[in-house]
Structures are given as structure tokens and as C-alpha cells.
Length: 398
Image 1 (cartoon, helix red, strand yellow):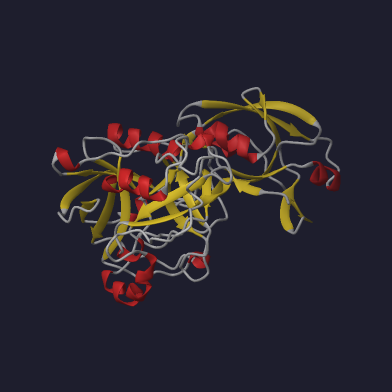
Image 2 (cartoon, helix red, strand yellow):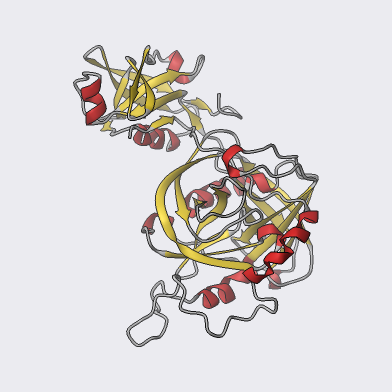
């Protein structure tokens, strides 16, 4: 199927998992069977998917900790976040429709010994007062918002807590994940703090829509149960290292159906460093939407090329518009989707061939506002180079 993408937007609907009225806890109390009331393990539970077993029957040392071991090592660094005065939410379509709220709950995790906590931007959106609990510590600590980036749905808090209760989690490498790898989520679904769930990596390189309407790339899909309140919490691999930040679910009911999404820790780490350093993140902006050109599509529209990114639309006044990129002027139906054709075909960026919009988006994301990018485009059978000075991404997707 032809994939239609914007150069930083996605058709996925945004889901604010973090927000939940504290009063809703009553009706979910019947689900207490999700966790043991006294925190103990069931005595006869079979090995988890997140528990690879070695030949001798013992848990493997390499990426093979048990869920219990991961929880014991990591839970102290997981934060239960309450954001008071948070902005009311609107119904997010297929992801469910949370009620407007004044106190939002969510999750987060410590990334250093200085009290910096990573969470989702939507968890603390509009909050006037933020407090956290760490691990099983019942003490509540004040936290300040260091900065938030709506384009990646990542925020950083600074918690005012004693150094002896700050136990940062170890960050892993989300670029080394494989489909089928075991993962564990720790968080506060429906306000039920210190909840652990387990599953596998269901898919990689997904795309979801950020709060500002742009695309979050290279997202991790998992079947580890995550629900409202898990937002911002860690997704850990089989060795107990953080590989993602739980952010969204695909659900018609608003509850878990085994399709959750986590922002990769590589993205979260880069954004967090910029937020701690500068308080904000600047994203480069091109201003086009496009579709991947495949062999079948090229044959269908009689185009003498087999790869590239079809420019379907150009945002008026954007850097792409000012550089003279041309959008499609006709629409065809292909693979069950409507595709605009007749515009420029981007075949290379900075001299490197591109296979589709993913490559174009990646090239733009690797640069900053004010930097130039050279696009090699094919128009009317002729190739030409177009130099574009990238702009600063607007606060919302056009």
C-alpha cells in the first residue's frame, strides 16, 4: 500500500494517556486483580515472555532478567506524577475520549542523580502545580517543569527530593531492538501506582501523531498492557534498560487492546538533553506532504522512476514554497488511497538517494532551522537541484 506522509505530520490520532480525574479510581477498583494487593508474586505463575530461560532452567544473564528482577531494579526510579491545573482534554477520536480534568496523573522516570525526570509533554500540559512520588516512597515531592517539546511529546521535570531517594534508570539503545524482544512497562495506569506489565516488541518504526500534529518517527509498538496513567513511564528491555517512553494506545474504547506505542529512548534522550540545556527544542521545517513512490505506483501513473518521494502538497509561505517546489495537480486512486500526482519527485537529499518520504523526513530532522538542504527533484522528465533554507517548525501542524 502506498504510504502517504507529511514531512513531519502523520494520520495517527493523538492520545493523551496521562490525564485522568482522580475520582475515576473508584470504578477501576474492581480491576485490582491486575496487581497483587500485597505486591507479592503469584506462586505458580508460568515464566513470562519477558523471562528467557537458559538451558539450566535459570534466567539468562544476557537480556534475560525476570520481570520481578527488572521491577526490583527499576521501580524506585519510576515516578507517579500529579499535574494540577492541567488543561482540559478533547476527545482524541479512535484513542478514546478522556473527560476534561483539573488533576492529571501520569508516569515518568529519573534519568540522572540531579532529579531530572522524563515524562510525556501531554501529561503536564497546562499544569500550574506538579508533584511526584518516587517508587514505593509515600513522600510527595514538588517538581518544576524544565521544558516540554510537543513535537516529540517529551517533557523534563526537576524534582526537589533528597539525593538518597534519587535512583536513575539506566538508558538502553532503542536502535538495537528487534521485533519479538521482551519488554516490561512500569507506571501508574488509572492511578494504580507501581504497576508492572510485560509483553514483547510488536513492531518497530511506527509513526504516531504528536500533540502539535507533527510526526513522531521510529516509534516502538508493544503489546505490554499500557493504559491511561502509563503515559511517560518507562518501557524496559529484558536487561532492565529503558528503551522507550510509553505514550499512546490504539483503542476504540480508551482502554488497552494490546496495541501501545512508546517514543524511542534515543529520541527522548536527545530531546531531554536539549530541554535541560536550553529549555526548548528547535525543529527544522520544510513544509511539504508527500507519498512514497513504488514500482507499482510508478507504473500506474506512467512515471519513469521507481523510488523517491512524490510532493503532494506544499504549505503556502513555507521554505519549500519559497524555494519553488511544486505540488501535485491531479488525484488518482491507488491501493485504496487518494494520491496527488503531477508534482515534483524528490529523488535525492544532499546528494544521497531517497527511497521515500521517510528519508526526506529523516534528512530534515537531522538539521536545524536556518540550515540549508539540497533537494534533487525530477519535474517533467528533467532533473534539477533545489536549495532550501529550512525554517522553524510552527507550533502546530498546518
